[in-house]
Length: 87
Image 1 (cartoon, rainbow, N blue to C red):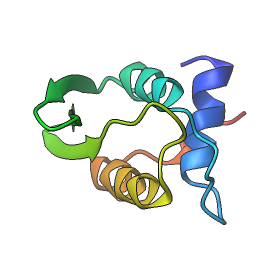
Image 2: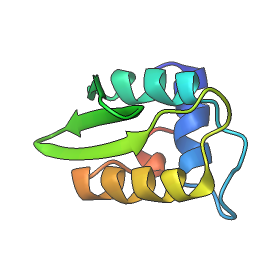
Image 3: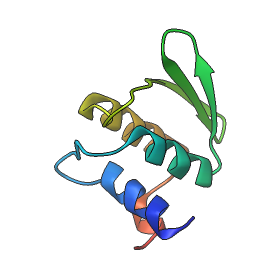
């Protein structure tokens, strides 16, 4: 996981919630964690990591805060913490 991926991961877990996370950067950071990402119908992405799955809306701009909260909870369920990946 490179520095850019770690920055995105820390932005996911940041308080207050970041409203400036690019979808492509988010996808690359999740793939660096070992997640598998697949396109679903209805402009959705299926993300699976460590036996857990979640579906999020695919956007062409910054990821909405509601989706960031959902991804944060998903990563916590998978046992991923930003502290494990220092900047």
